[in-house]
Image (cartoon, rainbow over all chains, first blue to last red; front, side):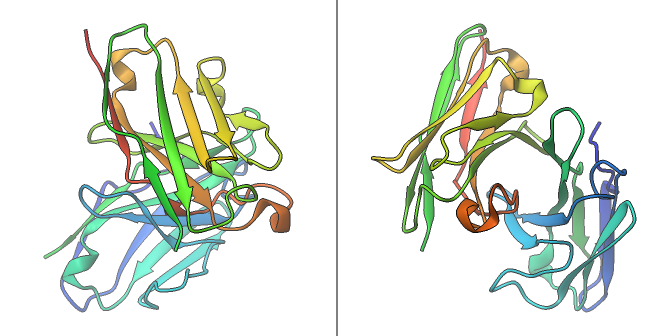
Length: 111
Length: 126
């Protein structure tokens, strides 16, 4: 059971906009920033969004992040077939002497 | 360009230990925190702990306290993760990952990982 809660799956057709939610608590999302990672099959995760809504260099502006209270979300607009991947949210959690917590991951399927 | 290259796959017996290496190149090794994240087959990501080479002290997830040791060798720009008392549930791909922001600039960890190793599969089986 992951500390951050994500839907296990999401889907959309090419060109559509999809959102993936990430729910946490006051000890993690409520008091710390959220990062998002994209993991293509058989590869290491890739940083997609940091500090809630910032994109690293090279990440298309089709990807955007937001945070409100103890929840965060990742939006992907203009969906493309290469966006089919697993997506994970992550945040620092102040409990248990502090540790990074991840969501369980959302498998995005492009129909 | 920063690269993190990890050691090869391991097969271990229950109760034994494994030590995985992560060699960095193309950047300033000492001032960026390195974390270790594992992923069991078909499962999500799990943070184990991290270290800032220039400061030398590691911090660990409570779940792994007493069983994991993270160290660095600045002379070779290599980080290590040793996990002891292995059990079948430790079968996973182990990744090293570097913080996006220098620990000197950030005055500590940033915990947003912009460079990752390729992963090392550790299989624990009798």
